[in-house]
Length: 201
Image (cartoon, rainbow, N blue to C red; front, side, top):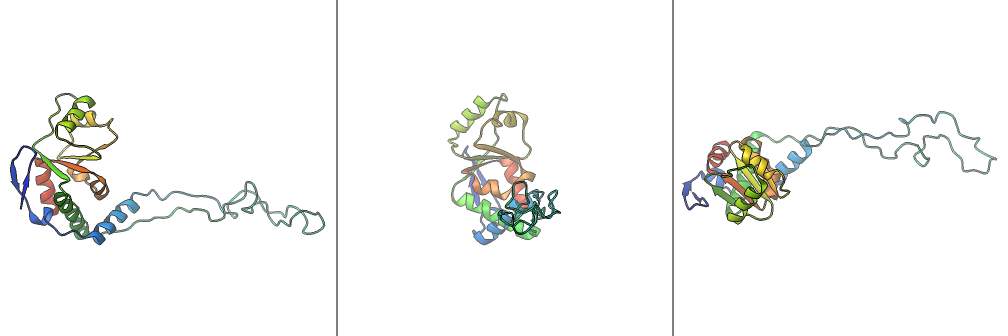
C-alpha cells in the first residue's frame, strides 16, 4: 500500500503495519494493560487494626448515657481507622508481544484510514523556540492534540515543543498505544515511519 507525505512524495509501506483491520477488543485490552502497568500500586491507608491506640475500652458499656464504644480506633471516631482502606497491590496485566504488535498495527492502520497520520520528510526548526514550532504546526494545518514521532527526538524540536500543552513528543522506541489513540493528529518523520514499519510488520 502507499502513503503520501505532506510534500507529495509517495511511500510504499507494509500492509501488515498500516493496512490491518481494526480490532477494537484487542486495542482495548492493550490500552487497559498499558494503563494498569503504569500504576505505582503503593497507595496505602490504615484500617482500625493499623492505627495507634484503641486497646482499652473508652468507657464502661452501660450507665454513662453515652453511646457504647469498644475501641478508639473505630472508623466512626475522629483519628480512627479507614473503613475500606486501600492497600498496596500490583495491578499488572500482561500482554504477549504478538498481541501488542497486532494492536499497535491496528491503531496505526486506523489512523491512516481516518487521515490522522501525517507523514513529513523532517521537522525543520532552525532555533529551539516555541514560536517557530507553533509556526511550523500552523504551516502544516496541525490543530488539536498533536503527537510528534521522530526516530530520535532532536534538541530543537524538544525545546520548541515542551511548553505546548497540546503537543506530545516521542521517539520510535517509546511509542505507546494511549497517546496514539488520544491524538487528533500523529506526525511521523519518514525515517521514524520506516522504523515503525520494521517493528510492527
